[in-house]
Length: 131
Image (cartoon, rainbow, N blue to C red; front, side, top):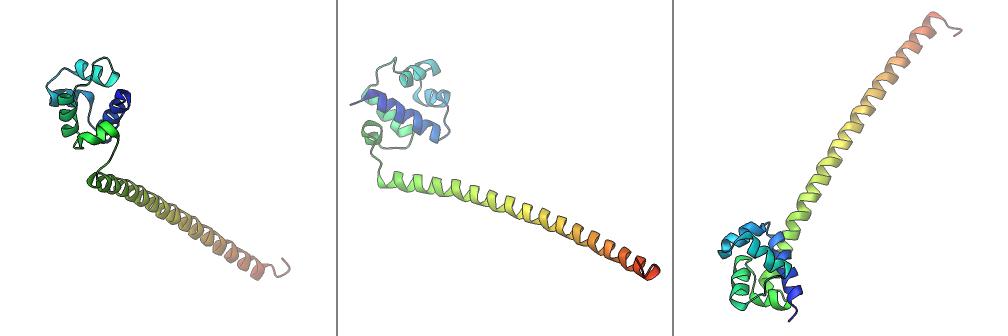
């Protein structure tokens, strides 16, 4: 069992859930420094503590130990990715609509300028047929 990989999994899951080290420390009933020592490898990981950490992170103990995901975890990760990409897609779509509106505004201004210039040319031709 590779303790460094387990620590990396703990850190990755903690961050994915948006938990701080202080939050996890409080949930475990230990100081923030003690928790940092767990993630940094200064403190040896023991099974009861691993079970508590897995429970707080809402993942099976096996996932911490072996990196295996359950079907529920895969579904949760897929839903999380879908939400992220949907938000990014909506943001890009909105940005694209804004750019289109700006371009349409520029086109309308150019059309108005063109009509104005055509009107001026028409008036000049009437007054100065040789022009």
